[in-house]
Amino acid sequence: MSIRLRNPISMLRSVQYGLDAGTANTLITNVTGDVLLDEPTVIAFDQDAKAPIATGTEAKSYLGKAPERISVVRPIDAGVIVDFEAAKALLRTFLGRVLEGNGARVKLCVVVPLGVTELERRTFEDCCKAAGASKVLLLSAPLAAAIGSGLDIRAPKGRLLLGIGAGLAEASVLCLSDIVLSQSAPLGANAFHAAMMRYFAATRQVAIGENMAEQTTINLASATPAPPATGGRIMTVTGKQSMTGTPCAEEMKEADLAGALDEPLQALVDLVCGVLEKAPAELVADIAETGIHLYGGGAALQGLPEFFEATLKLKTRVAEEPRLASVRGAAAVLRPDLDFKNIIKK
Ligand SMILES: Nc1ncnc2c1ncn2[C@@H]1O[C@H](COP(=O)(O)OP(=O)(O)OP(=O)(O)O)[C@@H](O)[C@H]1O
Ligand SMILES: [Mg+2]
Image 1 (cartoon, rainbow, N blue to C red):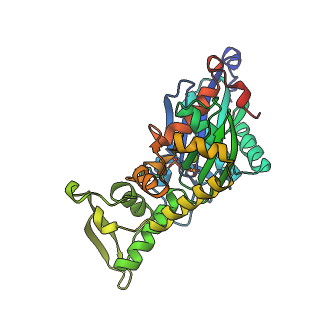
Image 2: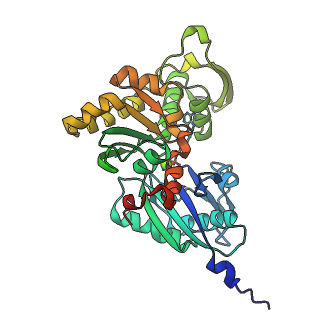
């Protein structure tokens, strides 16, 4: 039997990472915001051995296909850990991959949605520690995204942010390095995918799977109709005929999906209007100038800024690489030279 002792010198070394473990994806960056890990938040277990057999991209490819002996788990839903043991195993694997076997102590700044309870925040912290982190700071997603997008959050200027993740949308008003008010709803990209599935069922009597609904949303859907001159995008959509169960494949144009996402898009507008209604007049006047800032993977939907500009009459910008905005903000907070210490709650 061999006993492996941790190298005492590496135990003294400490590494710091930004972590955003979302409903769909987990991102880890170093303090300068370089992406070290970008994987789906999915883990697969062998039910008999109770051991993980796949994580990330590989585990995601098992979704909807795995035999009964394999359970495929999404342990985080809308910022909440719904399966502690699975989340712990997944984060342990991901951190291990980034650390590459060096036994350094890990300090994390972790993005958490604003709308979660104190208990859910603490569970997130406990899970990261159980997965191997020795110190965990939590940072609210809207603040993280604002910092990661390079917005000047310290100014006495109201800003409206709308985050569209996979499981959650959060509309928040920020001013003077704090969140003045915020509202969340289960309206992330998953709501786009569900609307896409309903659209195909209603208009073509075709059932499409979750992955096809996601691909169709990314490659073909648009929040605003494409100008006829552009011709639009084209994609082959595969599924099965609802009546006969037979497989089908159809080449579709962007214009064929007009209106497919109307319902979740209107719900996002209602979310933003709800926040604006409650915001103090001075801040709303600022927002008329600063506009809406979008972040999160769902914010990359084609035509979304034009849609909000037309509907809400507010200038709309999407963060550069919107999926990465929050984790880059979390990483920036770890840097003493940027002096964000006072915005960390813990
Ligand atoms: N171009 C695009 N158009 C529409 N949706 C997109 C596009 N690119 C990515 N997405 C969607 O963005 C989602 C992932 O976004 P993100 O990584 O911000 O979510 P998350 O952080 O895992 O979720 P949450 O913050 O809700 O817990 C996926 O569902 C993906 O389909
Ligand atoms: Mg997210």
